[in-house]
Image (tube, rainbow, N blue to C red; front, side):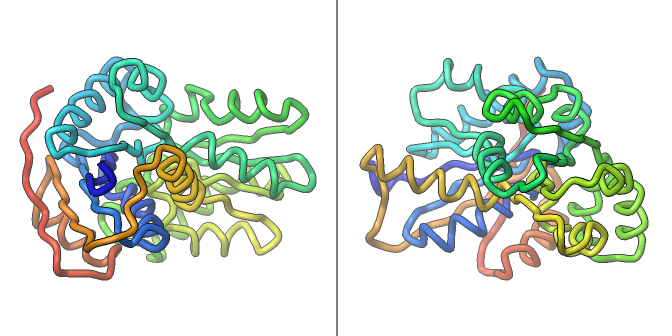
Length: 266
């Protein structure tokens, strides 16, 4: 079981931010990554749809013999993590709780900001998790609908990206937060823009970092950490292979892998 791959799923390429970190700290682990580009953005879907999509994708990944699954998507984590843990027997981890724990440790003034998709924001997943662990902390949230398509198109530091980010981040700057959670794995690729706008005094919490260390911890606890041999990577998309490959190669700084087209029915 140690040699079986780790499964990752996301609405698109945001989850590659998690994969990048996992490859650094778990270089021997094989990867099966599923990007549901055809059905994004997840942030505008309802909970029933999202549970259906993630269940369908994990069923697919189980055929690839995964030993654990990372829901590398904040929206999918907020919508379906609890249900997925009840449906499947393998360990399944999301990205929200680990990020919240990091943010609570980092804040000095107990004012934490969260930027996320529409679903995650309205679902109050981060607010509820923070209040459950630290009721005294004040939380400020805003959703950023244009960030996902910006990342999917590779416009990480374009002038237009700065203009859009300024608008989304303005209310958070005015709230005098000292810690900001990037509540969508896509937002990891906009850290430079976000940091430039928020200023160096605001600490950014990237779920990609948090969940990677959590994953390693669970693999060790379960006795299924792979520390020998060569890793293998497979990437799948429900969208355009050409478009996804172009951006994925930029993100991963690698052009040796192939992306396989998969068709999923709603």
